[in-house]
Length: 431
Ligand code: COA
Image 1 (spheres, rainbow, N blue to C red):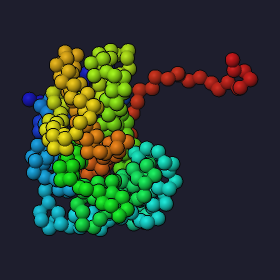
Image 2 (image 1 turned 90 degrees about the vertical axis):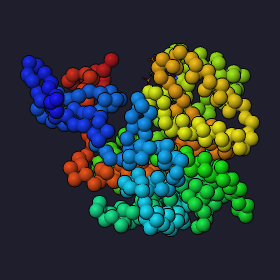
Image 3 (image 1 turned 90 degrees about the horizontal axis):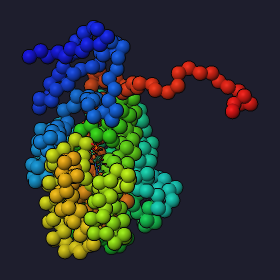
Image 4 (image 1 turned 120 degrees about the horizontal axis):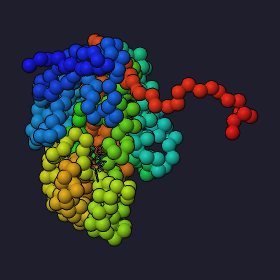
């Protein structure tokens, strides 16, 4: 079989190279197309465009496969934890004992923010969305490290410190963002707490009164972080790569990722799920009216937490998290009308031909929203939790861009459809 593609344009035949990934995905390499044919490819929404080659995460949307550095998500969820997963995603291999100890020690060493940063939190009004605070403060954190500003790719030891700083501090910033948004006093991290427990402590403890850390709650949140750790070239990761391609620093690139993640069609979906459930409840509906509305294009409603651009069969993360969700709800003995509506929606939509025919299944956001509600995470923090989880993926993608010797600034083209040339009309001559 030929490993070239033939393209006929204006009576001429052009040859384009093809390539095959390690899992057999195929691509036509069009990187020379414009130079040789004066055509570009047009792919609104990038559904058919590979923006890069990457060694980090493999997804097969039809088969419902997700692997971090080759390891199935199911194995990571069962046997690992978020911090080990972060190491794997960023550095490419599972850490040995010495490596995980060094990584954990670095995380602990860098978990405190520069004390002057706390004054920046004062500038935000009470009620500011924590995602806005998070993206601003990640960027601000880079100003407190002169080295980062003047750092050039290649100094590996320094990069390891910046990685640890970002992963550790994003959690501290996230917790402070929440405390600030509620007008609560800031709580410092503890040296002896592990990553996820420390986050819950900073989120919920009060001065002189530590939050009770239930193991099932810590485990469920750690699992949410782990399941979100990377998801190849989605909207926010592509944004991070886009910004990184201009050689912006690690913190600036990841802060841009936070902004991209905020939207309700991406990371904001878990918040949108709960808002939808609250609205259904407020209207006295049990979900059945809403399902009908979600099927009607003119209603402007969608069943949030259903559907996925890539997974058209099942979302493997949703399978794992559904089980965790059932376990947490059973263990915490929670009775919540919104969770009852969620169960009803899930059952009804899975039987409804509209959703079945379009392959719209509950995605990870549907269940993570329910778990977070059950363990008391405030709704406006849902997307922030996603951002903490996704940080290793963004960092790994940043690293890949920096390590690529032929890396060029990302700069897509367009097909212009605006007016052709016309001339400036002075103000008093305009109609
Ligand atoms: N509720 C109702 N209908 C939906 C739907 C939903 N959640 N998601 C998709 N559809 C419908 C579309 O209207 C379209 O119908 P049509 O074929 O009759 O025109 C069809 O299903 C295909 O959807 P499309 O918009 O092409 O899918 P997409 O791949 O572009 O979008 C999402 C994927 C995730 C953006 C989309 O499913 C969505 O908005 N889901 C809700 C938000 C969400 O949970 N996002 C988190 C993703 S992890």
